[in-house]
Figure 1 (cartoon, rainbow, N blue to C red):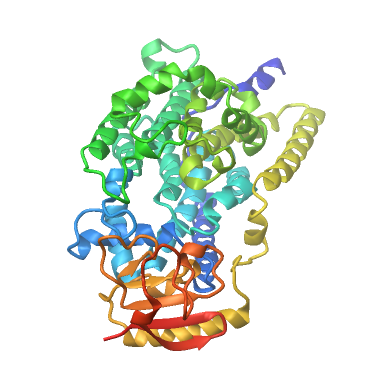
Figure 2 (cartoon, helix red, strand yellow; figure 1 turned 30 degrees about the vertical axis):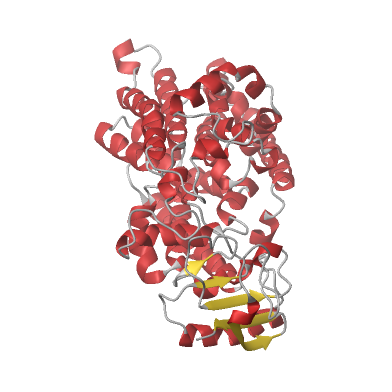
Length: 506
């Protein structure tokens, strides 16, 4: 009995995980999940629910296929100066023919893939088929996971793909498969300059779990060599990626990523070495920050308290809060570009903890099984409630709401008005739009009204005269603020309610 309870704090790695009918059930459910998520995201896209970063990512992904150079956009210019988004390059093969829906499809497919690999990891950890199917669904359907993939307002970030890739990496590392682990780790690292932190977290969890699970064997048998190699690769990749970013000349709209750090003045950190020195000299402030305190609570409720079965992961895991601390934006800890490394760690820890609990339910005594099962259900329910308090926007996804800013009548007006632009405008003609109207120009030469310095004047303007963000507000007699565009240079083509369509005079 004591031995069984001890199993709650260790893993059973390397169990026979041959394909059976439960894996086919998982695959079918994974495809269903991907289709369901894509349908919801596509509905939100056409309901004018997305803006900003989805369209920046789209331009960067397509630029190398359009002869504009590597990772170029009309927002920052040279994306590499700000972030090393190398994973956007292959996504251009979807973004070029399909536009923004292509990126939304990639994200939706990653959700289905995350569910599939979560179930496979549970099987590898000795969980029975039915339990694996259910517990993987609990992880992916939790409010924090739903809120992460929901990507309210933006719709897509390339960082959204990292947790699914990390689960695949975790699967290979638990199997100690060297080449697949290295290849997958390189793909994770290509996401962004801080993505190596996510890969390192996965390597640490895999290395610890395989070591503990092999108790009693010689050290050489317990040591997870692929996990160690991935950890070293990840640590080495961070300065390399930062050096790539520093090698790019900054521009008006594309300062180096370290110049966007909020807790120091721009230009204070002149190199990657200066950044590392700054972090080391301010560790106490970092560890005592509100970001770390909030993160600890997120780890507890986000893992359904299973982190309490593996509390030592909190020591290494605190590094996932580094970017949020440097940005000095506590309220954005759960925002995908700040949270994806934590999400990868959270999912790995939760799966390992669920596997331990599933084994605990097999205790010999029936009262022991009932006690563990009742406690698990209660903790899951309470954690889900607390997660929903952290990400209340997830309710919209559960209720299949697109969270559109406009009413159905307003959306019909916008569709009717801007259909004229879609039919008369040429794809290469510069166009600007109010924040929520980017969808109508997602596959065109879209510019931002507040970023037109040294850029061609727009031929078309798709305006919302009641736009909340004043710099992008466009009406027939007023065009943004500080845009230096004279409304007299444009002809009002048509107006529908709050929406206007303007074209530059010949």
